[in-house]
Image (cartoon, rainbow, N blue to C red; front, side, top):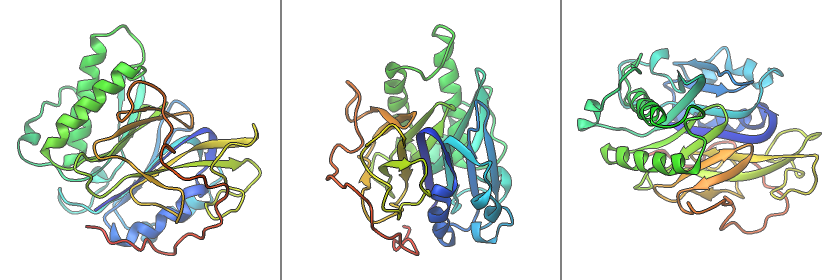
Length: 295
């Protein structure tokens, strides 16, 4: 039931780094795919209501040299609400707020009185619970921003703590694994009941090296200033080693390739490698298929 993928890096990185691995999940999620990235302050999105492997555009994206950014959000859809697959219901979704383009992708299902939550100025184009959630969340962010001095609505730790509380409250209406971005940060939330899963991996890549998890020079620890560093977030690990599971109900905020907040440690900066063993290099080979069945 849907696959999420997010990247936050210190410097722009080519999309071929993850598209080759993510595409193996499409057979279990045939109802659409989408890729969003921030080439600058603006947001670019390509999405289709078809299986990735049957798309005419996915192959182009895998080799398109112009696809380069610090922030990415990807989604493969297995629909649970809405009608037949349509572009309107395909993730990620986007909206503008206070001069920023927000992007959102969701894995899970929400139901019941959830549909009565106020939407304010943001209205869904499609019929999914996911887009409804996004519109409601943005309205809540807009209301909060209106009570604060002008500026970045999600710039501070106080706002991240507030966002964590809001997502926790919304989670009572069903299942929420989600990634969203304001163009500067990547917000990652894992369902409070631990449903489906969300994992993270720290990655350091020499700028001269091909972007692949299987490359032996892709390292877990920074060794020089010539290395681009960041994090990859995925529903399920994209390789055999180095991945750490989010805690149930955890919100993590990534910015410029660093973890700047976790609801598990809201008092200060955190490292996603808090419980990971030291792994100096990554010689493991990527699986040809996911090897895990979706619930």
